[in-house]
Amino acid sequence: MYCTYTLPWYWKALIAAYDLCKCFLLRDPERSTASVFDTALNVFFLQAMLSLVLVAPSLCLSVADRVQTNVFVSEMLLLLAAYLLLIRSMGRGVVSPEHACFCLQFCSCYFFFCYFHATTTNRKLLLGSKVVQWCSLGGMCLFPVCYSHLLQDCMHLSPYVLVFAFSGEVSGWACACCSHVLAAVEYLVNALYVRLRENV
Image 1 (cartoon, helix red, strand yellow):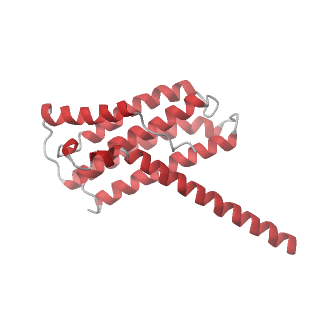
Image 2 (spheres, helix red, strand yellow):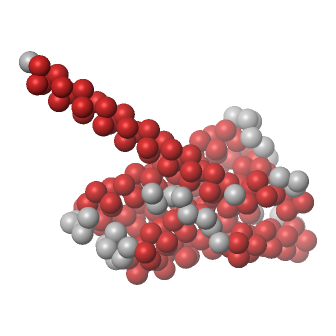
Image 3 (cartoon, rainbow, N blue to C red):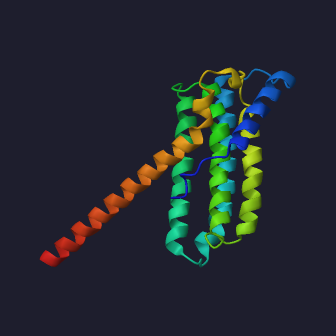
């Protein structure tokens, strides 16, 4: 599984420290909930586009292990779907914009850490692994900052800050479980199909 890693603590500390500095040094103007939702959606689409650009050559051209590459891409798409669900929940008022954006800071960093870690441990997983690694490091820095500037409150003071710090890992484990369920359903459907063909 490619989305069951743990984001290093120094990355989590950097995100919290940036949020702390922004809270005291930079005074962002107040934004409406609709404005925060629209901007978060735009940042998410930028993140999704970057992630798809990084895997596009590996999807179109031949790679060393097609199965492993496809598993990685499907897990990353599941993570993106989970983040989009969180943003949609914010737009419908189920989750507060502050909680969603603070959560997305850690999730976006974790997302690109998965890219970085996967291509570091298996250099043949994606084409252009060096470029993917450098772009992943850039994404780990850029997107938490983008989501941070959507916040209206200082979320480092929240009693749930530890829960937010592990939101990336929670989303990764949820996607890993979904991936296992989908693989099990595929296996069962295939076994049923083979059994029916043998009986015909």
